Image (tube, rainbow, N blue to C red; front, side, top):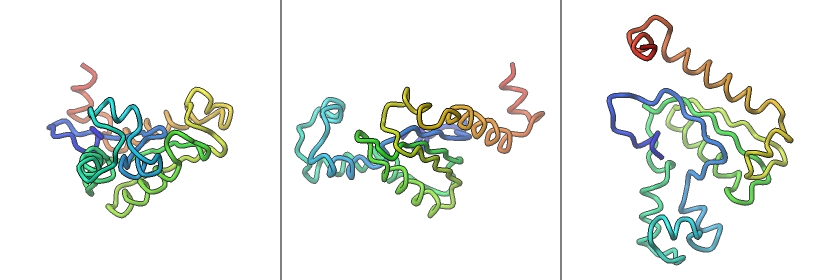
Length: 152
Protein backbone atom coordinates (compact mmCIF):
# COMPACT_ATOMS: atom_id res chain seq x y z
CA UNK A 1 0.00 0.00 0.00
CA UNK A 2 2.77 2.43 0.91
CA UNK A 3 4.46 1.95 -2.47
CA UNK A 4 1.39 3.15 -4.36
CA UNK A 5 0.36 5.99 -2.02
CA UNK A 6 3.67 7.45 -0.79
CA UNK A 7 4.04 11.21 -1.05
CA UNK A 8 7.75 11.84 -0.86
CA UNK A 9 10.53 13.36 -2.89
CA UNK A 10 12.25 9.98 -2.71
CA UNK A 11 10.53 7.79 -5.26
CA UNK A 12 10.13 4.03 -4.78
CA UNK A 13 12.14 2.40 -7.58
CA UNK A 14 10.73 -1.15 -7.54
CA UNK A 15 8.13 -3.17 -5.64
CA UNK A 16 8.12 -6.88 -4.78
CA UNK A 17 4.81 -8.27 -3.55
CA UNK A 18 4.87 -11.73 -1.98
CA UNK A 19 1.34 -13.21 -1.86
CA UNK A 20 0.13 -9.67 -1.32
CA UNK A 21 -3.50 -8.79 -0.60
CA UNK A 22 -4.13 -6.00 -3.11
CA UNK A 23 -7.94 -5.76 -2.98
CA UNK A 24 -9.14 -5.97 0.61
CA UNK A 25 -12.78 -5.57 -0.38
CA UNK A 26 -12.71 -8.58 -2.73
CA UNK A 27 -10.79 -10.59 -0.14
CA UNK A 28 -13.38 -9.76 2.52
CA UNK A 29 -16.20 -10.74 0.16
CA UNK A 30 -14.47 -14.09 -0.42
CA UNK A 31 -14.24 -14.62 3.34
CA UNK A 32 -17.83 -13.55 4.01
CA UNK A 33 -16.74 -10.54 6.08
CA UNK A 34 -13.67 -8.85 7.51
CA UNK A 35 -10.94 -11.22 8.68
CA UNK A 36 -9.88 -11.17 12.32
CA UNK A 37 -6.71 -9.30 11.39
CA UNK A 38 -8.66 -6.58 9.53
CA UNK A 39 -11.15 -6.35 12.40
CA UNK A 40 -8.26 -5.75 14.80
CA UNK A 41 -6.47 -3.35 12.45
CA UNK A 42 -9.50 -1.17 11.78
CA UNK A 43 -11.39 -1.68 15.05
CA UNK A 44 -14.44 -2.93 13.17
CA UNK A 45 -16.75 -5.93 13.32
CA UNK A 46 -16.83 -8.68 10.71
CA UNK A 47 -19.76 -6.96 8.94
CA UNK A 48 -19.04 -5.93 5.37
CA UNK A 49 -21.31 -2.89 5.11
CA UNK A 50 -20.87 0.12 2.80
CA UNK A 51 -18.75 1.96 5.36
CA UNK A 52 -16.43 -1.03 5.67
CA UNK A 53 -16.28 -1.42 1.88
CA UNK A 54 -15.28 2.22 1.46
CA UNK A 55 -12.55 1.83 4.08
CA UNK A 56 -11.24 -1.35 2.44
CA UNK A 57 -11.12 0.32 -0.98
CA UNK A 58 -9.21 3.29 0.50
CA UNK A 59 -6.66 0.88 1.97
CA UNK A 60 -6.29 -1.40 -1.06
CA UNK A 61 -3.37 -0.88 -3.47
CA UNK A 62 -5.65 -1.80 -6.39
CA UNK A 63 -7.52 1.50 -6.02
CA UNK A 64 -4.42 3.72 -6.01
CA UNK A 65 -2.80 2.88 -9.33
CA UNK A 66 -1.40 5.35 -11.83
CA UNK A 67 1.10 5.29 -14.67
CA UNK A 68 3.87 6.83 -12.53
CA UNK A 69 4.36 3.75 -10.36
CA UNK A 70 7.63 1.78 -10.43
CA UNK A 71 7.93 -1.75 -11.86
CA UNK A 72 6.33 -4.54 -9.81
CA UNK A 73 7.25 -8.18 -9.27
CA UNK A 74 4.45 -10.29 -7.81
CA UNK A 75 5.14 -13.79 -6.48
CA UNK A 76 2.18 -15.95 -5.52
CA UNK A 77 1.30 -19.61 -5.03
CA UNK A 78 -1.68 -21.09 -6.85
CA UNK A 79 -2.89 -22.93 -3.72
CA UNK A 80 -2.82 -19.94 -1.37
CA UNK A 81 -5.84 -20.30 0.94
CA UNK A 82 -5.04 -17.08 2.86
CA UNK A 83 -4.73 -14.62 -0.03
CA UNK A 84 -6.31 -15.84 -3.24
CA UNK A 85 -3.93 -16.21 -6.20
CA UNK A 86 -6.46 -14.20 -8.23
CA UNK A 87 -5.45 -11.13 -6.18
CA UNK A 88 -2.06 -11.11 -7.94
CA UNK A 89 -3.53 -11.96 -11.34
CA UNK A 90 -6.05 -9.11 -11.09
CA UNK A 91 -3.45 -6.69 -9.74
CA UNK A 92 -1.08 -7.47 -12.61
CA UNK A 93 -3.89 -6.83 -15.10
CA UNK A 94 -4.72 -3.51 -13.44
CA UNK A 95 -1.07 -2.43 -13.38
CA UNK A 96 -0.68 -3.22 -17.07
CA UNK A 97 -3.85 -1.22 -17.81
CA UNK A 98 -2.00 1.73 -16.25
CA UNK A 99 1.13 0.90 -18.30
CA UNK A 100 3.10 -0.09 -15.21
CA UNK A 101 5.60 -2.92 -15.83
CA UNK A 102 4.65 -6.00 -13.84
CA UNK A 103 5.93 -9.56 -13.74
CA UNK A 104 3.88 -12.26 -12.03
CA UNK A 105 5.86 -15.30 -10.89
CA UNK A 106 3.47 -18.16 -10.28
CA UNK A 107 4.45 -20.94 -7.89
CA UNK A 108 2.33 -23.90 -8.99
CA UNK A 109 0.86 -25.70 -5.99
CA UNK A 110 2.37 -23.37 -3.37
CA UNK A 111 0.34 -22.01 -0.47
CA UNK A 112 0.72 -18.81 1.53
CA UNK A 113 3.69 -19.87 3.69
CA UNK A 114 6.67 -18.18 2.09
CA UNK A 115 9.02 -20.40 4.11
CA UNK A 116 7.77 -23.37 2.04
CA UNK A 117 8.08 -21.75 -1.39
CA UNK A 118 11.53 -23.18 -2.10
CA UNK A 119 9.84 -26.60 -2.16
CA UNK A 120 7.90 -25.45 -5.23
CA UNK A 121 10.70 -23.45 -6.86
CA UNK A 122 14.15 -23.76 -5.28
CA UNK A 123 15.27 -20.69 -7.23
CA UNK A 124 12.39 -18.34 -6.48
CA UNK A 125 14.48 -16.26 -4.07
CA UNK A 126 17.54 -15.88 -6.36
CA UNK A 127 15.16 -15.04 -9.23
CA UNK A 128 13.51 -12.40 -7.06
CA UNK A 129 16.86 -10.89 -6.06
CA UNK A 130 17.98 -10.91 -9.71
CA UNK A 131 14.78 -9.15 -10.83
CA UNK A 132 15.26 -6.53 -8.14
CA UNK A 133 18.93 -5.97 -9.03
CA UNK A 134 18.17 -5.74 -12.76
CA UNK A 135 15.23 -3.41 -12.23
CA UNK A 136 17.13 -1.10 -9.91
CA UNK A 137 20.11 -1.02 -12.27
CA UNK A 138 17.82 -0.07 -15.16
CA UNK A 139 16.15 2.82 -13.34
CA UNK A 140 19.28 4.17 -11.66
CA UNK A 141 22.47 3.81 -13.74
CA UNK A 142 25.77 3.69 -11.85
CA UNK A 143 27.58 7.00 -11.48
CA UNK A 144 24.50 9.18 -11.17
CA UNK A 145 24.08 11.68 -8.38
CA UNK A 146 21.57 9.51 -6.50
CA UNK A 147 23.78 6.42 -6.75
CA UNK A 148 26.75 8.34 -5.39
CA UNK A 149 24.58 9.74 -2.59
CA UNK A 150 23.31 6.27 -1.68
CA UNK A 151 26.87 4.94 -1.35
CA UNK A 152 27.80 7.55 1.25
